[in-house]
Length: 294
Image (cartoon, rainbow, N blue to C red; front, top):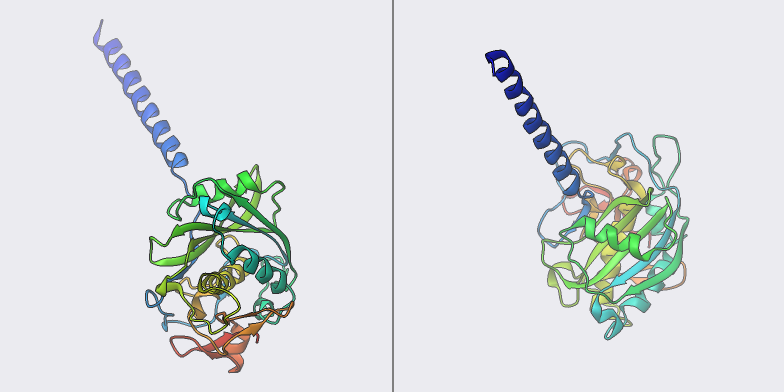
């Protein structure tokens, strides 16, 4: 083999190796791609609201959810044997949320196309999956559960997944988004919060359990954020905090009353209008932009 041919064969071999490596890297990146964690509800004391920059949230070029269609998923082996009152109480929570004053605390925000958040939130009931649940570390696993369980996913769908896995991170819940058979959907993840001091709102309402009270509070945080920042390009401030983050663990009243008459101890949500007009109550950093809608 002459020198020129030898160099040609060597170059072809190098090209093939590089091509295989690049393709393998691309497949690996795709394989390990995870939906983003948005608006984690940090446990008490983990991340207080920041005071740097403007407190107001701004739109980041994306859309909001003008209305939301909710179906809940209760995932885990214990939901079929010892669910307690949490399924029943969360059904009541979602049935009362739409049209409530609390839902109305997020109605001021508009998307890039001019659509505006409204309090039109409907509830289509729940599903129970008694297979072993995954923790929150893999957002892909939570999305896969949504795609498996929900029969007809909707683009305005919000699918909260309540697991029976005790908390293993420094957050109580988060929301995210992804695609089920080409349909973009919004979803959320929740740990089991029974006896969890870091995620306990310390409700004085005695008609339901502490675990149900804890889920109710963090559910308000995540649903409000999913409506105003469903896919990571909606409303948040210069530090990345969404409306639920900015008022986490702050309460202006012992409870709020939902449309169906149920009562919940639930955090406020950030309102630019309330902050700008001085009509809100202070968050943990003293910024008076929170509304509880009681």
